[in-house]
Image (cartoon, rainbow, N blue to C red; front, top):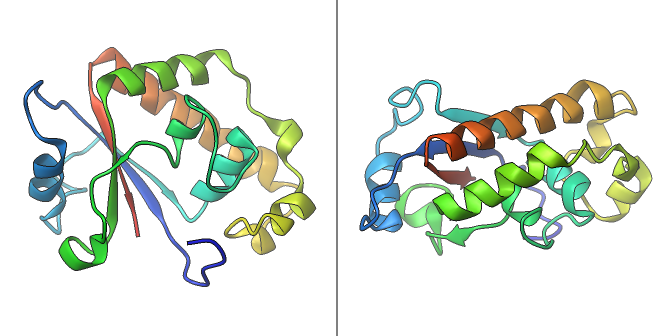
Length: 167
């Protein structure tokens, strides 16, 4: 997916998933409905096209990274090999355990402002970088980072999993 000209968006959904439930089946049921966002008020977080910038700031790489940092945006278990065929987007799943670890990391790690370097992000081919200015660090990414922290903390506090859609 590196170097792709198509802008991808990412949306998160917090859901309780029973111990024996198959996350893939849950994803097909939930995301198979065109109104899945409306069906889960207060449980959806939309990062739109800014997700890769956040991932870069958190991990130092546009796609990769160590856990738990990478789990916050790009990491998790891919449930759809080709989401365009079934749902029109890919779905990534984070178990309750991984949500809790990522939530703890976010709660104890300040916003990584030191990594905000537009030239380095452009060299890494981070999606959207050409439209950002230096003000994006404090006006876009810092608030988004804190919103992600609250989202993960709420999910962890309620024993929920997180599904991420990308498409």
